[in-house]
Length: 213
Image 1 (spheres, rainbow, N blue to C red):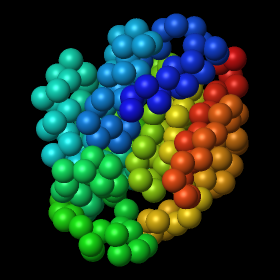
Image 2 (cartoon, rainbow, N blue to C red):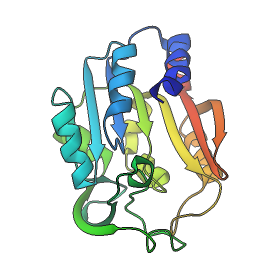
Image 3 (cartoon, helix red, strand yellow):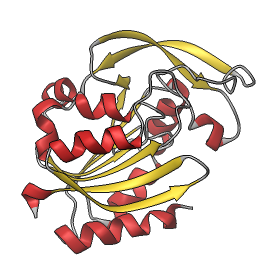
C-alpha cells in the first residue's frame, strides 16, 4: 500500500520541512510512489526513470505531468540487455533488472530481454537540465543500487535525502550488497537514519546528506 511510504514523508518533513520541490524516482515501475510522494510533499518537478518499456508506457499514460525518462541507469554509457518481466503480478514486474539473476527465478517466468540505452545520472542530469538540489531520491533498481549511485558522480552531493532498497543476499550477478552500498554512501557524507527489513534478505534504508542538515 502506498500509505506504507508515509514514514518516508514523515522523515523528510522532520529534517527538511513540508516541501520537496524535486523528486527523482529511479526504477519507478508504475509511477504510483512518485505520485504519492509528490502529493504529500507538494513537489514541483517529478522525474521518473524506468527501463522496462511496458512500465514506461504505463507511466506515460498515467502520469503525463511527470518528466518520464526511458532507459536504464548505471555507472556507464552504452547499450545493454534489460530483463523485462512480463506479468500481471506487479511484484514480479518490479523484479525486472539490468542484471541477470544468480538463481533460476527469471528462467521460471516470462522474461523478455530488451535492448536499452544505459546512461549515468550525472549525464542525465545535464541533458535534462535537472536543477539541484534533489530533495528526495527514491531508488529501487533490483540489484543495481551501487552502480546507480556511483553514476551520480559529483551530483551525489546534491541529494538531500535518499531512499534505497538493498539486499543482504546476492540475488543478481555481480551485485553489491547493502553493506557495500552503505560504505559508499558513508564516504560521500550520508548518514543512515532509518532501516526496515522486509522479506528475507531485503532492506529499505533512508539516508540523509549531512551537508544539508
